[in-house]
Each structure stands twice: as structure tokens, then as C-alpha cells.
Length: 412
Ligand SMILES: Nc1ncnc2c1ncn2[C@@H]1O[C@H](COP(=O)(O)OP(=O)(O)OP(=O)(O)O)[C@@H](O)[C@H]1O
Ligand SMILES: [Mg+2]
Image 1 (cartoon, rainbow, N blue to C red):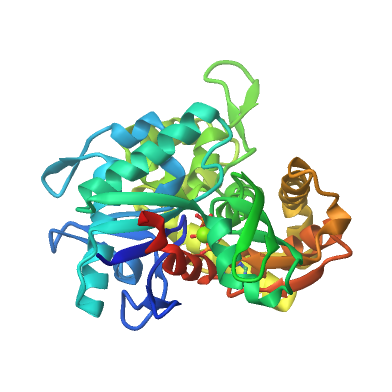
Image 2: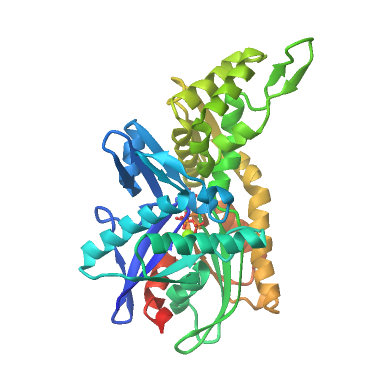
């Protein structure tokens, strides 16, 4: 029975199957090999859109609810809270299940096969907390079941990338996969053999490109909306700094939808009432009322990528206000991201040390994942393994390639 390899990513997802010992990716959406891990509950069409169609509906200003980076919520009690969407009571497991169900149906339409089993990737660690990390896999397994898969097996995402990239290593070489994605950074140390690989150890941290977006947004965009701004006390002359949570949440992909509840609008209005800089809090209120959180997140992400590509760029905030923008330089972005890229490099070193191998023994460093395209991650990780040869795997498809290759064998 055919097995579907599924890379359910924080930012992007993809599927592949094996044919004649090779992985074949399945185009799920207009010929695209990956699709954004996003959903849009369209209130007019009374339908849940996924992928690029979900993003297009958001961009077009359709009435509805957009959600992205749902993988980051796995394992949290919030996953099982029900809310009303399109006249149904759904929890987040249902929402991920419907996303996976649509992916399954699209793959079946494309190939004419039926997939009752899935080999799914998973980060080495969904979360630093052990209980939440374990619960996250329970939640994801349940989402596959509700999506109509009879069985699901899991493989560490960087292990899958190792399978897909072993050809760049010679026999006996020691490779380290560095998979810097949207939500997590994952590492696998492996020895390349004649016709298989020997996995020596895997490790991961909950940090990725969505965290890059968050820190850039918190530090550069949120001050324009009142972060760090002073609020007068109702009585007397004293002031206090506006509470940080609302700004952090607005800068965090998976938390944005929760800010559109009445309580955060009320908080923003209370802040405005006593604000020393009311023009900033006015912006916060209009962002919450017009539900522009994801528009800001997309603008920040685009700015981050532009700086990486061109050395300088801007975050275009015209959705908030005509002409509003933040200029970004490569140096400033590097400084903002340095604590995170350092943690990623430490986690990569820990992977190797836990496998009782000296870092100098690593012969090949193989970068995959969208955030491995960031110069700051390349240089931080490269500096930790100065002796290794550096290879760049296919950033967005290496993991699904490996999952496709391993899919049949995963079920014996
Ligand atoms: N050209 C680029 N330059 C810099 N960053 C990029 C580029 N293209 C994509 N990214 C970033 O890569 C991230 C997505 O990478 P990827 O698709 O590998 O993650 P994912 O597999 O969905 O997440 P995870 O594996 O952590 O669950 C996003 O944060 C995105 O902003
Ligand atoms: Mg990934």
C-alpha cells in the first residue's frame, strides 16, 4: 500500500512518494512543490482554504480568519480548546487535521493513488519542555488520524534530510545536517556508508525563521505601535511602560489570531486613554480593528529576506499608514539575530558532542531549511565547524525528499 511522505512544516509543507528508489514530490497547488502551512476560514465562501489560496484571500482582504505556524502550538493545552468557526466548534487539532486532509486529497488527485499511511517528519524537539514535547507528537498523530490516515510513523526531519543528501559525501565521511526552518533548528550527525547511512545522533532547538521575524518586528515595528511607550497613571503624574505582551503576541505568527478577541482591543483602548504618545496607540488600535497582524508579519518577513539578499531593505508598513516604513540595514539585523544564531550554533555543537565526536571530525556541513538561506545563520554555523566542507541542499525540499525515500520502509 502506498505511503505518503509528509513534511508538515511551521511555514511550508510538502509531500513526496518513492518510485523506483527515487523520491517524487507531488505538486499540491498549481504546480508548486511546497505550499504555505496556512489556513483561511473564508466567512463568505464558508470554506477553509489552505496554502497559497489562504494567503491570497488574506491579501485580498476577504472576510475571514487566517492562521499560520500552527505547528508551533502543538503540545499546548490551547490545541484542544474549541472555538466557533464557520458554524462549527473546532479545536486546533481539527484545523491541522483539515489542512492535512486537503493535502492528502490533493496528493491523491495528483497521483491517482490512495494514501492510508503517512511518514511524517517531526522536529527533534517541538519544545524544550519534555512533557510538551511528547504531547506535541500525540497531538500531531491525532491530527493525522482525524485527517483520515489509518497509520502514521514519524521520522526526525534532519534524518530525512540526511537520506536525501548523502550523495554529496564520500564513503566513511561524517556529515552534519543543519536544518534551519521556520519554527525549529534541527541537526543530525551521520556517517555515510556504502549503501546506507549510520545515524550517530540528532538534536534540536525551538528557534527558526519565525523567531527571526518576531525579534525584528518587536524591535523595529512594534515601537511604532506603542511598545516601550509611556502610559500615565489614572491619578497623579507618574507613568509606566506599556505592557509588552500584546506587542510580543502581535509579532508572533501563531499568536496573531488570538489578539482579535475583544479583550485585547479593550486593553489597547485603555492604553490609549492615558498614553503619552497617543498617535502610536492609535495605530495599535487600528491594527487590531482592521486585523492587520498578519499583513505586518508578511511585511517583516519580506524585509528580513530583502536585507539578506541585498544588504539593506525596508519593512513596508503602508497597510497601517501611508508612507510608514522601517529602514533595515544588514548590520542591525545581524545584531538582532546574533543571540539566536549563537544558540543554533551551540545546539549544533551539542549534537556532535553528545555523539562523542569531536567537532573537527565533521567532514561535511549540509545546510537545508529556508532559514539556512540567511547569511547570519550560515556564518554562525559555519564558524562552529571551520574544518568542514559546506554544502547547500535544496532549502525547501530536502526533508520531503528524504521522507519520500523512506516512506515505504517505514512500515516494514
Ligand atoms: N530567501 C530567503 N532568505 C531568508 N529566509 C528565508 C528565505 N526564504 C524563506 N526563508 C525563511 O525560511 C523559513 C521557512 O523555512 P522552511 O520552509 O524550511 O521552514 P518549515 O519547514 O516550514 O519549518 P520547520 O521545519 O521549522 O517546521 C521562514 O521563516 C522564511 O522566512
Ligand atoms: Mg522544515
